[in-house]
Image 1 (cartoon, rainbow, N blue to C red):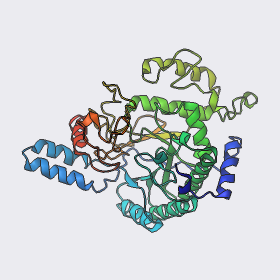
Image 2: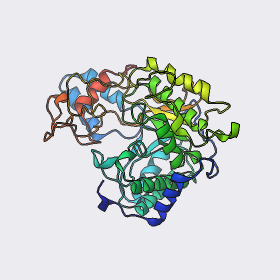
Image 3: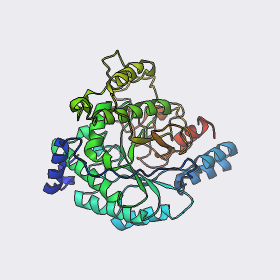
Image 4: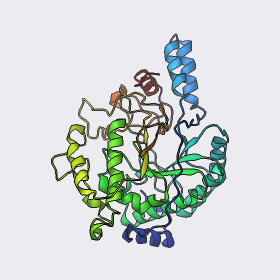
Length: 402
């Protein structure tokens, strides 16, 4: 992330540094629970113009069934991504989405400074002050309506690319954003929990605490990724348990702040654990069974199921960097959005990533190349642009089917 893109705010950095060193029990008053009823109907944004064009092209060229699949896919509720613009533009975008009173809008707020570590989705507000004003605009647009806010996908899980100074700034920005959004009486705010093949449980738990999760509804998982729903719910439950473990004051408080002691998808003292083999995860379950004391997990989460119907991709070829998260072939749509999850900690399954929109111009790490060998050597569309070949595959391989 170029240093020139971020204006250092001494005040925000001081706040961030204090948050990093603070006791886990020193926190603002927790936000009241703002739940989604099981019969919640989610908002369907206007489809990407590329989807309409693809549907017309398929119908015109004698593929009416595929045209119907694309139409069905974009008729499923998904998140509205608000990624740039002025505070007034953010306010207007949010206001337009929440005005349909019979549905609940899912808003993906994606504009934090230094976004995506300068990779395919690089961008974001130029300064912390700009970002705070943009969040204020977004919150004002939500007003008194009920809305789910997916606050900064990758904003916490990808922090390894930041310097210590910029990490503190990022945490301060997120804390301020949580506080501002929580001023709206029905805003339901979730922070970034990455996914079960990224940060270890204790790492992401610590980052969630530092970012202000005590004052938000919970965290989100698997955004723009392909991990299976069952595995993500398993992982998310561990994260919730780890948060409870690290805030348990019983027995003299020996657990307090020790999220780093939590077993994870990578390690358990009870036996080997493999993040790619959930049959080994019983060893981590066993650690929590023995270590929790009287602590009870209460932090809720949501899971992005938009593209995980076929699970994660296992590349058959050898690449310098397979980029398994970036436009993998052979994937399918997953479970439809619902707040009737049947799992006490899982508030909803959502389509956060809009299926059919590209993850970026993937090159599988091949130096000097701009093409994607997994899609016949084409140049994949830029991040967020419509990717017809992938869109059709997602629809055709949906599980459950469209």
